[in-house]
Amino acid sequence: MRAARGKGRDVKHKLAVARALLHRPPLIFLDEPTAGLDPIAAAALHDDLESLAAREGVTVFLTTHNMSEAEKLCGLVGVIRQGKLLAVGHPDALRAQAGGPRIEVVGPGFSEKVLALLRAQPKVSAAQRQNGHLFIHLRAETDVAQLVSLTVGAGAQVEEIRKGKASLEEVFLTLMEEGK
Image 1 (cartoon, one colour):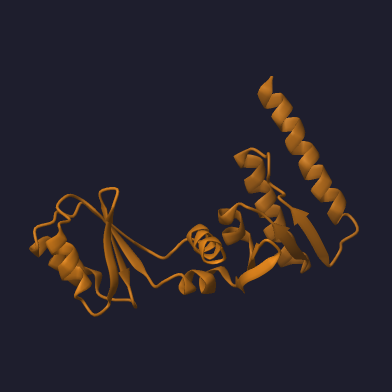
Image 2 (cartoon, one colour; image 1 turned 120 degrees about the vertical axis):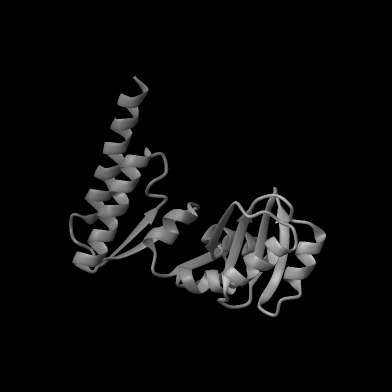
C-alpha cells in the first residue's frame, strides 16, 4: 500500500513540474524538486531537467539542500546562509577553494611517525588519521606512488587508495562553519 501511495505522490510531483514547463519558459524556479520522491523518480526528474536545459536552453534555478543533486545538475552554485551569499561558482571551482586534491588510504599502521614523514613532504598540506583511515591533503597534483612508498616504508600497510577532491557537501559545511 505504501508503494502505491508513494507512486501517486511521485506522479503528482512530476505533473507539477511538467505543468510549470508547459508554456516553455526560458527560466524556471524549482524548490526542492526531488524532496519526497523515491530514488528512481528523482533520477528520472534529474534526467528530464538536464535534457530540458541542454535541448531547450531553459535555465533552471534550483533551491535544494541535497548537495549531490546540486553537484550533478548545476553549472553554477550559490551558497546562501541567513540571506547572505557566501560563495558562488562552478562546483569544481568551489571544491578547489576548499582545498586541493587528496588521497584516502585504508589500512593499519598509520602511526605518528608516518604522519610526521608525510607532513614533511613539500606537496603535502596535511596528513591526518580519521576513523582508521589516513587522509593526505595535497597542495597540488603529485606522484601518489611516492607517497604510498613512503607510507609503507614507515611501517604502514596499504589495503586501498582513493584519490579525490572535496565534495560539494564538504564545501557547504565549511562555508556554514566559516559564516557563523
